[in-house]
Length: 204
Image (cartoon, rainbow, N blue to C red):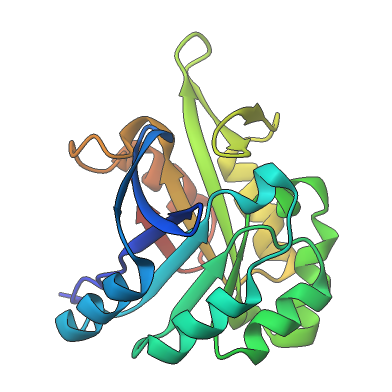
């Protein structure tokens, strides 16, 4: 049996580490660098850090913060938040980050995935799907901007498109399960797993 890979996901808002519930009610829980040090000691397999302010506020990634996180991190690091160009992807990778996560930018500009993968390699391009279930239609739909904007895209078809464009990994984040401590949405995971062969990381 394969050993589970443990990949904590740290959310940054206003420079601090926060915990959310269904993408709402962010609660400050500490300093991101201290959290990285703790997970270094725990010897986790990988770390995902997401700046949940950047895309909503339309600001550049905080490169100084990224540099500090990468310098402290002793495991592969994936960083996302506010990334919308290939130049930004290249700069983040140059700071010592192994993977760059894209979400809203992948929805609005899918070709960015192909261009970024060509420059830094598919293994460094991660697409995050923030997904909520429509209770009336019984279908899963991708949302962006911290779960506030409907994309009109569905996770299985979008995951296939991202794989075809050169993404190296998919992260599935179930908005309805976020912070609820009730386990993963395995139906959602199964749908995406059957659609693609890429590595999948599951949140929520």
